[in-house]
Length: 446
Image (cartoon, rainbow, N blue to C red; front, side):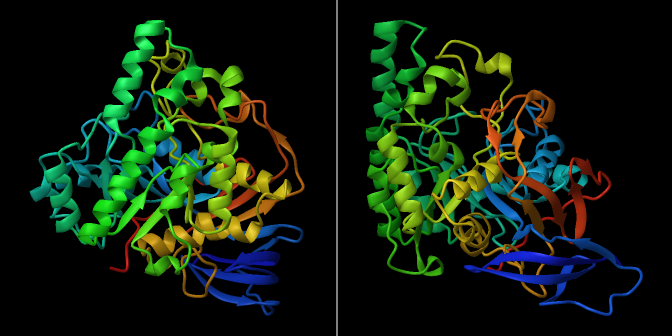
């Protein structure tokens, strides 16, 4: 049996940072103590003095592009980048080719991940205007959630039939995760922009086309429908300060029926960055104003926003370099999401304890993931060691994404992810991977 002792770490868990040792046996944490003694000779010892030990990051929204879009990414390539970024579990979206809108197509993705994923994995089932019967077959103990696109994005899985939406919200007890942008508003804004600029719309128009109004109309409708039907709703990638008023912070997360997520890019970039980054930071929903970014930070810190995710969505540079109307939305983030949040810790925008709450504890609580997201005896040893005193610049040479680029290229981060454990196995250590070890399918306490 695999045995590891991590000694002298600063453990970040449940709002506290304490010095201690951890004993891993097989897949699990079996002992946490101030000091573990009498260590057997067959045990690997890692001295973590000066480093912080975090639970593995759980990213609740990624697009790994397999099957069908593997020229952009695969589950293997992106999960490898993810573990280098401290992500030990991910939940992947259904807008692949073919779309995961039947139980068999969903199972096909699980089968690929079982063979190739370096991290633990689950997938969302995709709802459409006409697959309610198939949707209701989804096993809540094995599948993370139902995903609905209430605004069109990559793959165009738009669900815009109001009668169908109400049936879905009324019929499933599973968590429903939604992409909220009002299609009518976006189409009107885009039509006006094309009339003015033709195909060469300036990228600075993106947050005006996919506007605050488009986001708020859609989010508020989804929330009203959830309240009407009693559905459990999770609103993905909130991007405006106005939307944050729709969410509450007066009850614990476990008691919330309506929850919210913010993405790294909406916390990091704002509309002033379009001049330098162009379509590389074209996302749906759009990166918006500095005021919106400040509002998102406020809502994150006061617990109206519950989860931080990446919405990792790679495209090739060739695709992203097209004119506005043809350049797809999305960008790669799993390798650098935690580093970006650690940079925000350095800048005193957020505490390390709060980062762990939003990226580890809360995804586990929200999705009711079994035995993950915390540093606890009896839990899976999904763990990340970080050195917050080592600087690194992001360059093409150290990017692991299949697409070969990052919106953070040229950025210097002042932290390093040194070790990542997945199910007790040291799968990543300072640039070296255990390529034989694969992750597990996530299961849920439902």
